[in-house]
Image (cartoon, rainbow, N blue to C red; front, side):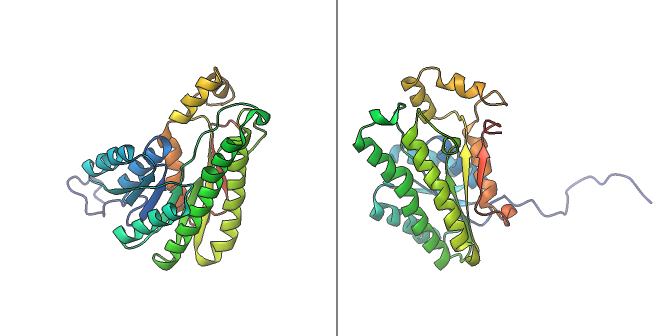
Length: 267
């Protein structure tokens, strides 16, 4: 037998990207985890539609993706507005002819502090965006997946702050815990149709939201790092990687889970 290594061009087919051939809709895609997800999903072969409120940020990310050879468009979307959310999801179908996967990442911030010091208007706004906005998006996304691709997957971005008492961010944590429940209910409801629904629960991540919380609660990042076995914050792309896997066919038997991506903080 000749064991001489074979050199030259391989005849093996090139590996396909994790999300090759899929159309992806991503909320909160102008910065942070959402922008990292948009870049990653495009690199993995998806055609992406970016949605958020700030057009300048969306335009920048979409142009970066196109410059790298990916396919990306964007739509301005207010997650607290049902008409805006439905129009954004419809835009994905109109552009690309289908919807396969969605990452509901968009969220608004709460100023750190005890619940009795929180204005009612602030609570209502967090509810409108972080919980109702996810529900509105899921309803529109599932309808679009059902009528175009037929089967698909949705991932909601939750938080490890939803898995425990959260004295500094009580309303934010409460809405994210409700997102976990919506995720599980949707998984049970739409699993028979071949539509999988999961959530990720990120821990300390280097995002603008964490930096803003640090200003209102000095020392927050150090406290979070001290409670994280890996002793560091996540890069947004590390969180996006988890979402990409859950949206891909490689997680085809995973639904109804809330996956912690927290460096072991809740271990």
